[in-house]
Image (tube, rainbow, N blue to C red):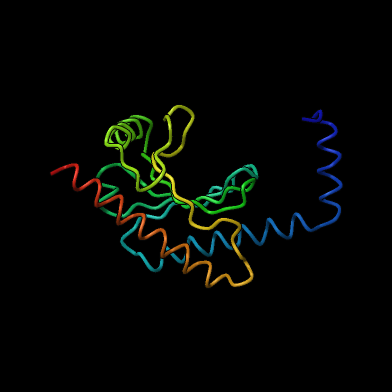
Length: 165
């Protein structure tokens, strides 16, 4: 890894070209539109604001009623480095996160990726929604993300309901 001052020089060069700002502004606009889409199409969900991040990840979260009752939330995350959208199941706090992580981990659930540990993790369960998403057709991308996300929510809720019975 180069020294900080060298990274700053490269950062400045990239900013002078102007494409980074344009792409970042467009990406944040798309994620805000996606957030609005979920807020409008799922009015029963509590939808959070957008976390823009440090060009590592950007996300918003929402809580379907059965998840909120369990102190769980769903996050739609864009990971900048790997350039993909993921959906994450997360807890409202570290205690809830650890409790549900243990439930998924000990069950041997294989439908989606259960994170190896909660230490330093922001999620319990993760799933890739779109790898290298195509932004040339935002409406189609939104439909894909919504469809995959709703399947994830249904599967996770089915698992949680089965565990309670």
